[in-house]
Each structure stands twice: as structure tokens, then as C-alpha cells.
Length: 316
Ligand SMILES: NC(=O)c1ccc[n+]([C@@H]2O[C@H](COP(=O)([O-])OP(=O)(O)OC[C@H]3O[C@@H](n4cnc5c(N)ncnc54)[C@H](O)[C@@H]3O)[C@@H](O)[C@H]2O)c1
Image (cartoon, rainbow, N blue to C red; front, side, top):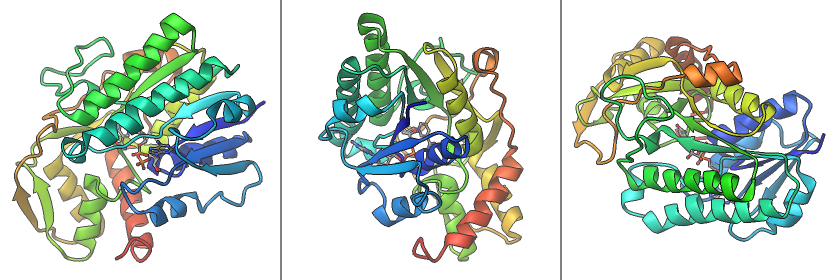
């Protein structure tokens, strides 16, 4: 079998996908620009578990500049995770989101036209929906992004769909709902809550903390991603954890896992943050056999353990 090319391989989710694929005996070419959205050292640390694995090769470079047709000649399939993440920063820095989320995806799709890659799995986001006020959202629900980030992911997934319809690029889109677990990005809620609480510092909560999140443990995201890669291309699938909690509930769970009281302070709500995210997983279970396996309690405990073990690396 030809290698899987994983873009964003040094990132939070990418590094877990690479690790699983290597564990399954697949060869992997990782592509990552090690962008400065968060420190490069953390991304290199994400790769440390498998950088010496002979079946893995990292190509450090930007999708906007690399010779993609040459790389794709080697690959049998692609998992495209590289992106500029984050709702908050997308209000300030939209051109970067257009470049890294839309243009980079377009450049990859153009290069795929010249390749015989059998399957592109694209990582989209629940942010394309906006808020789920009235129950779980199926893949056919209206998409109305509430942030420039969500809009950039929507544009990218529409490009993937367009190249599928008009140019027969074999592709599947996965909409991940808030992903957590070891190696979660440093600015994401749980990592920042746990880091602050472990040091006895106040946690900053944006808004009233009653916003509800569908929380998806990273190994469940990897299960869905690998299942999609192995299934016939086509379609759009929600990938959620089957766990929903308010931010305030998550903070209580962090305190319980750390065995300490947690002090919090409220800051104004971030524009673009959905009030509720909630995934209908019917189609994903039916077509990909996907069922989330990790409860929020287990997942938070694993993330707490990771934050405590890596505090010194992450500037603690
Ligand atoms: N983390 C979540 O909760 C979540 C939820 C929904 C969707 N997603 C999507 O999953 C994917 C991975 O997210 P993550 O949380 O692991 O983010 P991350 O920032 O940890 O990983 C993304 C990686 O892509 C790399 N990258 C960015 N632009 C690049 C480019 N032009 N060329 C090469 N590399 C580039 C970055 O250096 C980074 O290592 C993204 O597409 C994101 O939109 C994440």
C-alpha cells in the first residue's frame, strides 16, 4: 500500500492520526509548515513519539509553496488537516484564514487532479453550522457559520465538494466537533483551564459559561478518520463524541480530576462562539460504523494527566 499523506501532521489531531496509521502498519508522509499559531516547539514535541519511526517522514513546508504534485505521486491517500484554527483570532486575521484554509485546500485539490490518489479525507468543522439551538444537527442542516473561521472551513468544504462533482476528486468530508485530549492546542478551553487550575491560577471563562459543547475525545476522532479513509470516498459526516457539557460543568470536572477547588473569572463572550453544538451521528454510525467510545470523565482525566506530565515543556 502506498503511504498516506497527512497534512498538519505536527498539529494536535494530525499527530494522533499519524500515530494511529503507523500503529496500523501504514507508511506516512507528514506535511506541516509548523506555523506560529502556537509555538513550534509544541508541534515538534507532538511528533516526538514517532519521529524515529522508519515508516514516517516529515516534510516541513507550506501547502502554498511545496511541490504538491511530486509529493502526491508517492501517496495513495491524503488526510487533509492542515489549517489555521481558532474562532477568536479569525476576527483579527482573516487573510491568514483565507490563505491557510481556502487557498491551501484549493492548491491541494488542483494537485490531486494530476495524481492517482484514491481518497482525500478532509477535516472540516462543526463551526460551519453555527449554533444548534433546537437539538442535534444532521449533515443536511442549514450551515450558517458564526465566525470568519467557520466561513473559511465552509468555503474549503464547498471546494472539496465542487472538485468531487465537477472533477471527480474522490473525497470525504468530516465535520469534527470540539476535539480534546492529550496534545490539545494550548489556547483551547480545556488545556488552558487545566494548566491554569494546576498552577492555582484563576480560569478565564468567556461569557457566562453556560454554552454547551459536543466534546469529542481525540481517539474517537482518529477512529472516525481512519474509518473514513478505509470506506469508499464520498459524503459528509459529523464526528462528535456523544458527550455534551457546559463550560461550567467542564470546569467542575477539571477541579474534580485535579482534586482542587477552581477559581474562575468571567470575560466578555467571544463573538462567533456558538451557544450550543450538538452532533447527530446517525449517518456516521450507519456508513462508517463509528461510535464514540470515550466518556467526558475518562477523557478529561487523560487530558489532566497529560497537562501535568508536560507542564515543564509547555512553559509551566
Ligand atoms: N481541534 C478541534 O477541536 C477541531 C474541531 C473541528 C475541526 N478541526 C480541524 O481539524 C484540523 C486540525 O486541527 P488541530 O486542532 O489539530 O489544529 P493544529 O493547529 O494543532 O494543527 C494544524 C496544523 O496545520 C499546520 N498548517 C497550517 N497551515 C499550513 C499550511 N499552509 N501548510 C502546511 N501546514 C500547515 C500547522 O502548523 C499545524 O501544525 C484543522 O483543519 C481544524 O480546522 C479541529
